[in-house]
Length: 482
Image 1 (cartoon, rainbow, N blue to C red):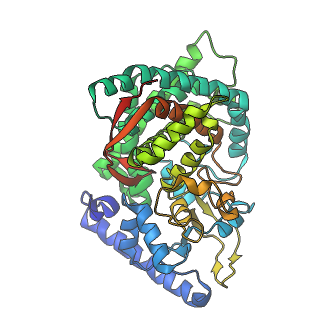
Image 2 (tube, rainbow, N blue to C red):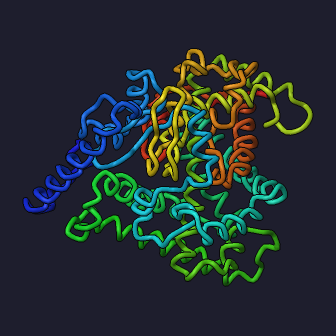
Image 3 (cartoon, rainbow, N blue to C red):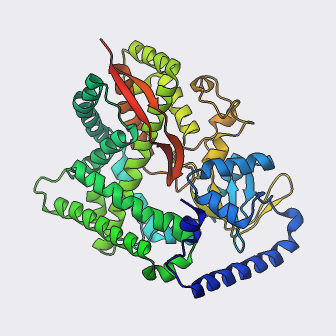
């Protein structure tokens, strides 16, 4: 995909629209020059890349590697992106990340999350601070209590057992190769719909969901952010209209999930997520309720599914680590397999090396920050808490570009810092489903590794599109004798 098609993507617009865009960009550029002259000496370093290189780098499949490359050229974990008229910063230093995320004046930037919302109604994830966000966050916390997580984890165990006894066993018997991302995402999709939304889904629904989610996400989370004019002229652009239609198809699916719950005569007595969303009075109408179902479902299945797939791929790529893990799992006779010490090292290293949320969450600063080197992060800066830069920091992780689970045997204080390694973000807007995600990983992956050997046929390619993962991976499984 070329930069023109992904970022500017104006072939369907008139020459006049090109001119408007160029004029606006020029005005932003002049404005930024005037602003920056005054505080040049105290400014955080700018990435050594031009405007269009920056936009292309940030929106490409290799975005995490491009961002890391800039940090290493500058030899600084925190820097500014060269986007005129904006104050966009990459924050890869954990000390500054802590200050920003613990600051009550920090919020989610409407400029980013408002566009990502697309044609959905506002949700807890896309809203800034306010009564609505607080209400949803507080009420849904009950869906992730210890008892509820244990219940949902039992559902995950059921689904992985079914998959291992049918699909994975068949793959092993026929030596058929498989894509771990597809398999694990299917499991987590079905699991969360059953456990959190009391809905029995089909594989076709999963395929349709993935198809339409990609169309909407590429428009509203990439193209429309890189080029805000797409929102203004959207209905003149076929691909934009297609994304709007895909959004409506997804909303129709969420509506079926909601209607199935309402018609269910045997509703669960547990604090299921759909029960809480149905009863929350802050939600204005079913459109907003369906939007909440959508973001909770998406956030709940693909991040966990892709993280499982990435760790499985890394173990297949590093057979010595896989063998050692299996040996340790076989020694684990008490408690759950997920409690195996070496397994925890593998999971942490997998999350460090291949973080699904590599580019991190965005925050807008409510005040100015003075850094130790004398530079200043201005008030109103849009900061991306970049996990990839943080996780590949050679000052914290020796041989950071290598997968080494043993590094977690004796972690340094910096490695243990909650703001240095934060796969689920940190602060008041951290991932609400962290406990469930870890419970799934701890119950699914050890069972697979203990009973099957995974061989890497094709590593595929690590790439980023909303999540960082391997694409095109091919594994082969072999059933191990007891």
